[in-house]
Every structure is written in structure tokens, then in C-alpha cells.
Length: 239
Image (cartoon, rainbow, N blue to C red; front, side):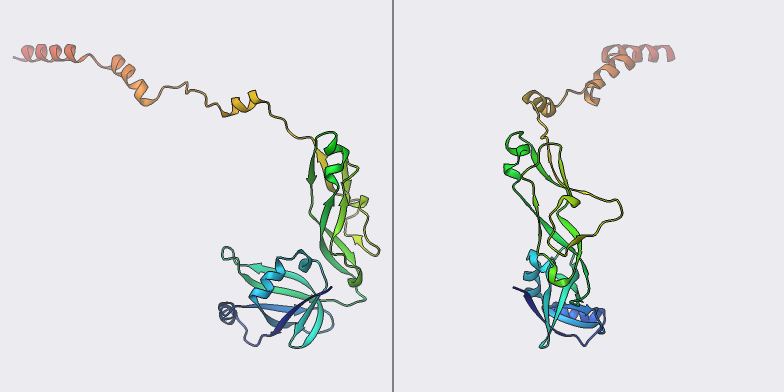
């Protein structure tokens, strides 16, 4: 089932127009690519925001309905406000059925809990990457790629070339590249003694200012009684 989203052409341009558009609950955007010119559009913020929370929206062929004219597109980019969480802008790219596309699709990890590395050896699943860059025709675009961790033991890994990709789907890799996708790692064990030692705060070896003050007074100053006697003797000598 394809995801549909509605839009209308945007006439006003510029920063001020985009700001007014956002205040009215709309999102400025653009659709480009194919054999047609780029078209500036505007979309309903609430509808777009809900779609963006759906994983499929990011890795599917979408139907963008611009004023009654449907087009097949891909979501290419979107900007969010740094703290308000509002969508600021969105880009869509038209797709042609006979041209391959490059997309990042999510990875779904399965069977880690029954793998020997977890079930028998007490290891912990480690997902090194969560999406994969692929190339395929639009009709062959998968919603996700499954990563079966059911046979992994501690210290062993699944690489990109180990994955079972759907027909017509190829990973986008540089020459000689075969990155790790997932592995089972040995958990770090901390004994009770180590935990207690980490929590303990060692006593300060250097005395504080208050602790050192009495010693400095004893070394550098005469007691109060002796100082008073010395002052009296000095006055007599002056007389």
C-alpha cells in the first residue's frame, strides 16, 4: 500500500513568505527531478509531521498529489526547527520507473535472542549500523532489509555482503568495502569489589586551608602572650 500525501503549489517566495506560511500551519517544500521543472509546494504541517514519524515514509515510493495531479516521489530531505520540533522545509524527488534510485533503507535485526552468542554464551547484540545504502529500480525498493543474527557467536560478525538482499537490490559500496552490520559482543563484567571501589571517594592527602592554618600560625608567628611581652620591652627601650 502506497503512502499518499497532498500538497498545493506555492506562489509566494522568499524568507518572509516561508515564515508566514509556517505560522499558518503550512510547510514550504519543493519537488524536483525527472524531465520536469522543479515546483515549489506547500503542505499541511500536521499531516506531514505524522508521516515523518512512520519509518516507511522515509524508504518508500510516495504518491504526492499536487492539486489533483499525482506524482511518484521519494522523500529526499527535511529540516526541523532546532528546539520547537516543527518541520521547516521538505524536499521530494520524482522517480522514473526505468531509472535506478539510491536510497537508505532501515535494517531490521531478528533472532539475536536465540543465537548461540546470546543464549549460550551470554553475549550482547551489537547493531553497528541501522540502515543500508542501496541501489535498485523503484519497483524493487524494499521497505526494510532483514538481518538474521540467529547463528552468531561471540566475536563473529555479519557483513554487508553476508546479507540476503531482495532481487534487483544491490548495496552501494566502494571498491573492496564490506563493512560490519552486526555482531555479538562479550559483556563487561564488574565485580562487587570493583563497583565498591569505584563508588568510594578517597580522603584528601593534602590538608585544606583551614587544616593548614594552625600549623602556619605555629611556624610563622609567636604566641599571643610572648608577643605582648615583646611589645612592652620595646616601648621601655624607646623611653
